[in-house]
Amino acid sequence: MGIGPSTKETSLHHFRDPIVELLGEDTDIDFQGVVLVGTPQDNSDKYFVGTRAASWIEGMRTDGVILSADGWGNSHVDFANTWEELGKRGIPTVGVTFQGKQASFVVKNKYMTTLVDINKSEQGIETEVVGENNVDLMDARKAIALLKLKVRKEGRK
Image 1 (cartoon, rainbow, N blue to C red):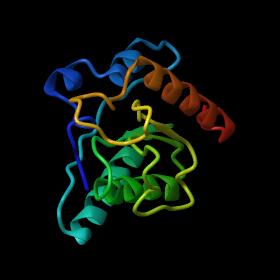
Image 2 (image 1 turned 180 degrees about the vertical axis):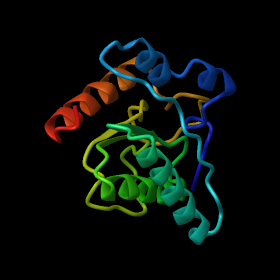
Image 3 (image 1 turned 180 degrees about the horizontal axis):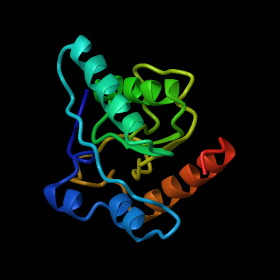
Image 4 (image 1 turned 135 degrees about the horizontal axis):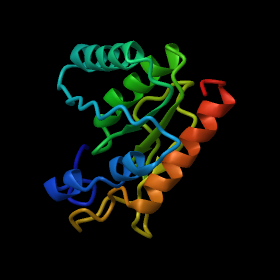
């Protein structure tokens, strides 16, 4: 489990990430930036980085978060934990990751309610095509629209 060819985002993708590009252009959003968090091997470290990231975001007084994970399987432990930590702090969050049809998340929590699945293969599986299952402009538009709705619904803006 983990990052495979079709869910691996290339360096070029990171430089031209559609979510970042659209957030930067959106005049309704005060785009604060990007927080990068690694995927530690040890579970205690996984929980630590999620807690630390959520504390940082809370300290920035962020109204909402798009939480994106480059990978799946074991990487979703970090993803779910960070999402839960954001939820405990009342920060509306939209998740963006590969889920596909093969399985549900390794771990789940009550805050994981709004997800944009970046699966693009008809079979709903991770494939051998590099970058096939990456965030595209449509995924980014959907995530931003869902986040705006959540932020408004929860009265943050």
